[in-house]
Length: 396
Image (cartoon, rainbow, N blue to C red; front, side):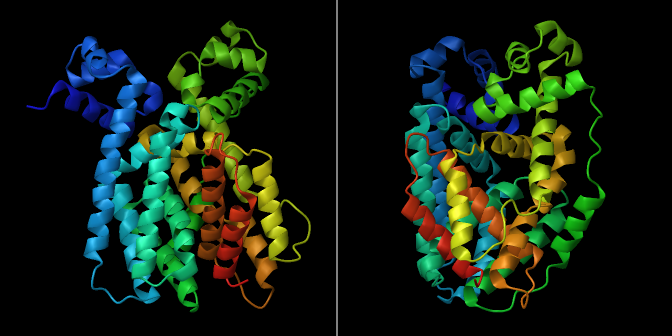
């Protein structure tokens, strides 16, 4: 029979996958693990130290998974043409069959964004993936694009956690991997009928959001802003009331339960995400790759927060009641990036939706990593090198 220590750690893993860190409490963990509250403090200094231990346990398993996948690829032809199949299987296996590990990684990124106690675990995850994709890069002769593969995996595995239709999701992932492989090999980009279908469905079936009265809309905006700055754990009726400049009674009347308030906050975050995805290019005319690089670096300098978007994506991946948002979040990405890439490549080559989504995903991953770096200041030259590399990959 597992020890109380092991049961507590396993319970945290399950809670991360099913409920999320914001729903955790000492009492909830003790009840779910079937041990008294005193056992937590017997084994750990605090609830936070239990979470750190749970992260370390998942890191051990993740390292074993990485080594196992690389071992399965041994003996394959060491050329970029083999890369697409490896990439697609890595994303699918991680996001679907290793789902508890995938949620643990995402929860660590959320925790590290607001608590230095989790910085070490966050750095270990970062180092693990850098090592894994460097090894894969050597196996498949990716050269300078191994770092790009790292970023693409971070983003695609995040999106693949969001379920829509399993058949379409898996086929669309294969098309994404083949496009990435074609770009690496400098070959024509293949067609993507599954992604085209999913995109059309996403446009056709945009969720109809409730028409809120001015006061409710004010509350929705305030709740979304709170999640964006401090996470779901900070979302209380009192905090929302303070941010919205309303009375606690008004907020409680409009949204009677915390669940209703959270759903309203995600509604606000979703609307903001869709607006960004549907917007055209934010700047003026594109004169070259350096314009794009400088624009993204300027965005990073402003301290762009990715927390609200991350919380939304994790919640949609986890919670069936929020699945109505998943199709659009997953398949409408890349409109702004498509215009940007078209400006870079010129009118003689049409940019496909998968190329645009990959470029958008790379940028999103870069913004997430830099926003979550906390006190570690982004190194502008390193960012510039990454961006120039992905632009070179796209053929600009």
